[in-house]
Length: 482
Image (cartoon, rainbow, N blue to C red; front, side, top):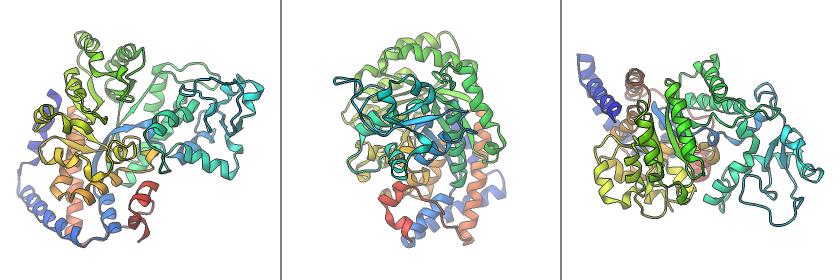
């Protein structure tokens, strides 16, 4: 919390007019508010989308790396031996009851799940019957390839929460255990964020359980070195997107406390790129209830300086006290916070507080927590002083981007220019970067936002967006059809 208070103080200092130029900046921001109000009245959907795409954005700080890969990215990397580390993959294209009836169809390897993907090492361990169900990834027919791509994104009306939690990750299978694929997914995300003017990415990942092509284990340190090597590559540096990592632990697993201790020790020993811990997994699995981890966290804080926590909480249909309990754990940020609206005492406590809610509009819609965007509590939080920012969650599985989130927010809730600036700024102010890095990025955001304002007030044309993702073209066809 102390870091965030320092960051807020820093932001206040940055916003004070210290010169005639700064005073002029405040005047132009006021003029920009008037300009944006008028623009909203006349803009077509495509023009509004182009505006939001071009707008400098602070960052995406609720982002699962393994869920942020577009289906096409997974395919491209997994079938490219120069990028995937020399692995070969097979995917299930035919269901046969090779193991008879009564197998665990809810485990990580359900025998009837189509497009479950395995490495050559795993493939060689299969029976002949099981091998006959799999096809070399590069040998898929055109129809099979399209079905493979569709199988790891929500692309049909009947797909929702259960499809996402119970099939997508299982289908990715052994690809999730390849750190080279993960590293190139990181680069793809950075390049995509460069295109939509996002400055910062704080992504959730794991450094444990990765495997070499022969099935032997990577050490967490070796996995982390691959990620850092990618971040320091010319291709990544050229994006000018700053990246930090949170380690994710699966909250409902039997060994979650052990995961937490190991993650804490790793982050404490690798401060810099690794800046926090996140608890992930279905909140409706009560085995992952927040207070399960209170004693472990108190023990860890007694042994070393604190590690920042951002925890999924409030991603639930039912009213509960998970958000309050999560704050008791020491969390600085709340992921989703959808049902905070049903906990008045905690909602009141979070007004004008240092605790931020990471809002994921598209995720909450597609995973059926919100029946429609209009009923989402986001505007109530924003306009009653609860710190919030917009983020993408598992953007690859929605086939969306951060601009899509902003477009939904503006089109449904009539956001003002000042509210857009607040959302962008909050992503950096509440990031887990060091204070020095945060101040540097805040200054960059301020400068680029001022340049954007000057261009709008001077009527500089905005380029049309060249690539739209599937979600926005389905949800708001006019954005893509003009």
